[in-house]
Structures are given as structure tokens and as C-alpha cells.
Length: 155
Image 1 (cartoon, rainbow, N blue to C red):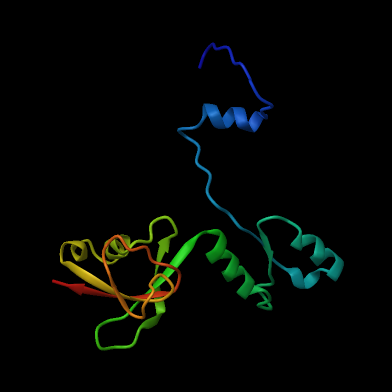
Image 2: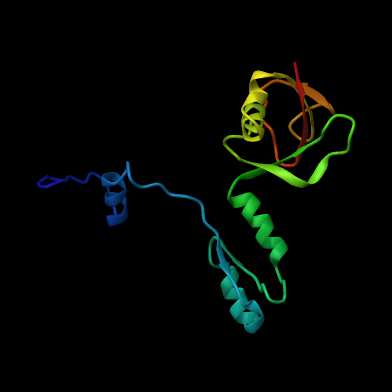
């Protein structure tokens, strides 16, 4: 923009103005601030660190508070873990398929595994919070929830 006239009809900040101008080039992503070396702080300083929004204090050397960091990561980044269960075997709880919270349908899951699964898809057998009955047959449009277990049935 070489020359323009700007009118504000609200109490806008400089950041609001830049967001409007750069709307096509600007994208906000979720973030978590990990504050390391909490083993060298006093209790009073640690209380101050816990007040920082979107921050998790940890000590990687002494492995303090790593469980909270994992919990916050799954929650704030809106990730969904889906476990696979091959027919006739136990579920594989070691390596989940991780989906984004807004793309967690059975179709998204199949696309993440292999694109040909969608073409050969018959139904899916799902265990977990996303279904009423354990297990339940579902279609491609079914939305999965965190820690669901799925078996894909092909034609």
C-alpha cells in the first residue's frame, strides 16, 4: 500500500491494525512456553512462574514436572491420540496415531495411515469415549476422541 486513508471505528491497537493488513500472510499457532531449571528457584519464585499464562515450569535435569508438561501439550495443542487394534490381537498402546482436534474423523485417521484405506473402507470398530456401546461399528464421518481404539474393516 503506497497511499491510503485509514479510519478506525473502534478502540484498535497497533497489533489489531497489523492483523487486518497482514490477514493473508499472518497465522497464529498455539504455543506453550517451557521454563526450564526450576530446581534452582525458591518457592516464592516458582509461584510467580506458575502465574505466567501458557507456561509450564520444568526441570529436565531432575525430570520434575514433565507429566504436567505432557498433559498441557495434549490439552492446549488440541491433539487427539488414537490407538490401533489389529484383528485378533491386543491394541497397540505404544505408538498412537496423533490427529489434530479439528481433523479427527475416521476418514482423517485412514488418510493418515494410508490413502488406499479410504477406497477399501467398509466400516470401523471403535472402543472409547466417542461411542455409546463398546465396541461400536462406525462410518467414515464418525468423530474420534482422545485415546479411542480403532479397528479398520476393509471390503
